[in-house]
Image 1 (tube, rainbow, N blue to C red):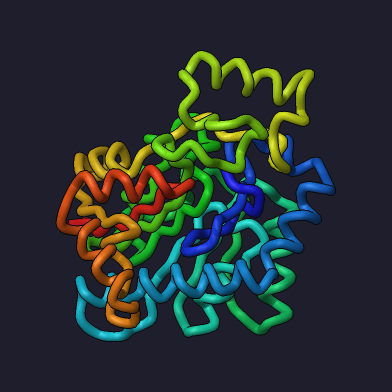
Image 2: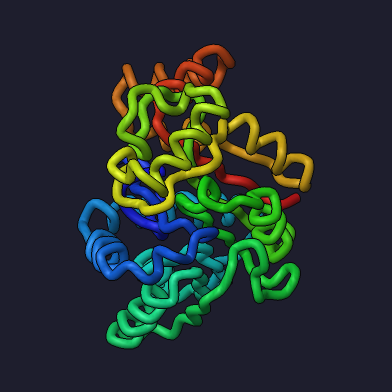
Length: 283
């Protein structure tokens, strides 16, 4: 999806491309590993991860009392930056990625930082964790690369406790601007044309896509993901629901209020945003 990382999250800046968890061939490309290892430690990435972390924690605290450490699973953890930022606050972390080279980097960085984090090599469609074993499931920039995306979400939901929070960011089919392909308004192309360019990008025309060797194969809207997760017993919130408007000026506060109050404005907001963000609470 975006040109940055398999582990990257969201928020106010334009996020990066993720490692295709369904396409493990990327693991053999040292350029891919070096690129994501470097980008995962940028100041922009850290700022975004902190924003994600703080918003997820605030949502968890609304659903349950107390301030005990949370059990968190970072699905598509890459080089471990996001997991380490959670662990640095005392939360219990497990990270999983299909790319063994990035997982090894994550282990080395956590050890050097004195953080105890369990990093595993594995698939997002078959998580090696027990039912109801975590308070937070993180799925940043991953879903668009997983062929069986429904299974991925089912697994992330399965391991959540009641009142737990699932966070995900992924492609946005509503917005014409995207960083996956070097093609104008690619998000709006019909499915058959997208499939054609996907085939070309991994055969004779690799220059069509950004850094990811295997580009996104799914394009979502918040409303599609909201309805799917609702059928699994989760209540969903989008980026506009999660904005803390108290610190904003008058004009931004009015804009956020309008988006929250009137559905057409919310649709326009999603059309203008090149990636989906979902916060979901397991009821």
